[in-house]
Amino acid sequence: MSFVLDNSVAMCWLQNDGRPVDVAYALKVLDALKTTPAVVPNLWALEAANVVAKAEAKGLVNEARTQAFVATLTRLNITTDKATADHALGETLNLARRYKLSAYDAAYLELAMREALPLATLDADLEKAAKKAGVKRFEPK
Image 1 (tube, rainbow, N blue to C red):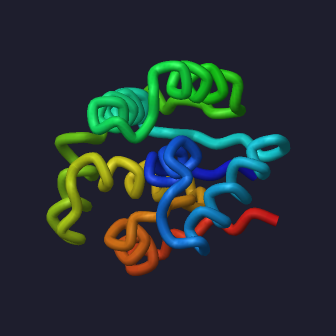
Image 2: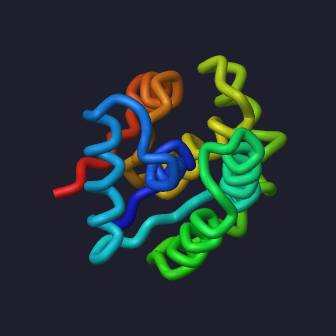
């Protein structure tokens, strides 16, 4: 079974920062991608590019590190959902309102709900909303 991959997990792979329990979870998710495919909303690559650019601008990582990271991302078993925009002004907006999420975070929740998939996230607000909405957290083995 596949899962929805939130950008918060993938960006933890780049910066390797945060609480040790979060870093450990992110690394388990990365390992799970060897055998379990992930799906992401079509805004995922833009979010990733934004985090990478900001991390470089702040001097947290250098361009060589981010180029290697981006190359790794492109090799992972991640599929982009083509229908994200079709739901943006409907169900995604409604989820953002209901759970007080950004539209970006609501897109991950909408995708997980639409596809009946668990969600891998380190975002506390998104995780709380997913739980309320009946979406399970992805638990890598």
